Length: 605
Image (cartoon, rainbow, N blue to C red; front, side, top):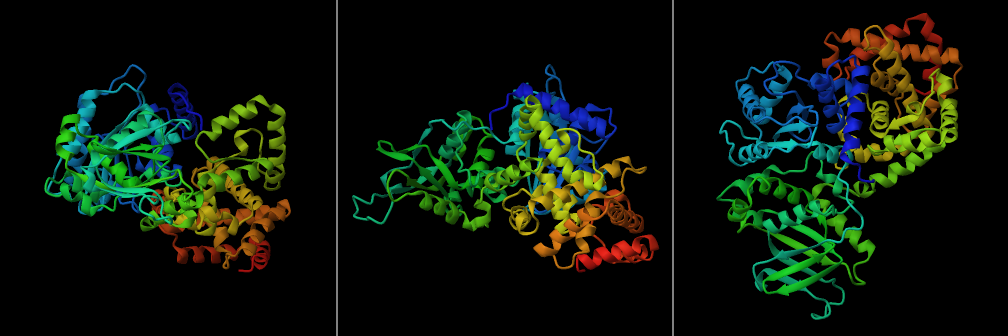
């Protein structure tokens, strides 16, 4: 991805905010920015995002996000500023003190947030993150120092979990949104020190008559060196982490146990013994003996992403002198493999990445590049008239590409209409043929599992270390053909449009409608699943409308029978006893009976 400049990114945010305000009848830019942060950076589903905004009198919290699986609670304050506004010291101080004070008092106005906080504070595996997002780059050094002081000195004996604060300026927000942009042609080298000759193990195959071995070094390295190497790589736009595992620098990128060990005066010297170390593969290595060090050429960290990221997170809170004084005697084991000989071929390289990461529950599917799998799908979708948005930048790229070539855009729309017209869905513009990857996968998950998973697990469907990604997102082709994936998505879009046009703007419930169709298919094998979708799209318009109306009515009946607030309902597991009850009611309606019985017979329920 070409590095996008800050100005164009700022314009992208403004465009998104205008779209949010129009779509959800808002007249408040800061509130729309809250919604943008929740949906774009935290990947919350749009319907759930509103429940996470704390509205007014928020005690310095604009919104919050709870990722139960990751044991992570984010308390968020957003500053939607123009270019001339500066972050106020008092705002930062209030944000660092007020939310925790009020929540510890047990009377925060959001009962959901209070309940999550109560659990998190007593669980030493949890992280509570105080994240402040600022929509310009007017860095306030005073504010940064307040954050650093909080991270290094904050302590409350009544809170067992780890608490960290961070400011994200516009450049940082852009990196979170698009992923960090690295230059492919950067030449990078770094000197990694050790204590003396006794703290370095050299494996030199020729000198030691070990023809089956590869040149490598094991050294006792200062963690300050690793911090500096990471910092230097960021400053030079060099990607230090192997592309296969770079994605692990996401939400779950810091480790509580590492943080606590490094911050504990009595324990940090034991870090060398507690940590499994890191693995680096280099193009070349130069050994120096005065002082003892290795110059690493084009290093790639293939194991230890989380360790390095956590070291950076902790040490970055200290001034240079304090960093040197506090961590000068803290070491880590570094394994360095040299690539510049016949023994290290590509297969060996891939195996080192795979096997050194096996302890982190990263299976072989996780090493099947997300780019490779989904970019292939993107090409297939394009041949059918649809643009699959795999990366955040794809929307801009496609808009520019087809904006210049009207004949190609018209041809694309013509192909897409062949799919959409069958179910009465209008396709008129480039936006109508764009399909966000995460949204497509949500629809797929709703069909294969149910609507609850689609609404509440969106943050996991592109998380390589999660079962949803490994067993479903990377295996769509084992369940549905790409034609039927498109058809399923269009069915969702039809329900979404009907929902927006409905009186209550809540029904039909799109993911429930898709999930209830999936529920009717008891044996979810490839043949049955594809047969169900194919059947729907092969019906006459009259018969399709009746089936669609049946499932549309079923979502309405389910909502009405649930007896609780809609926003509570979509966060809960599907009540299948209630669903069966509502199905029996619908099945007694004569106008549905014949066509529904026929549909059930065809899909073999």
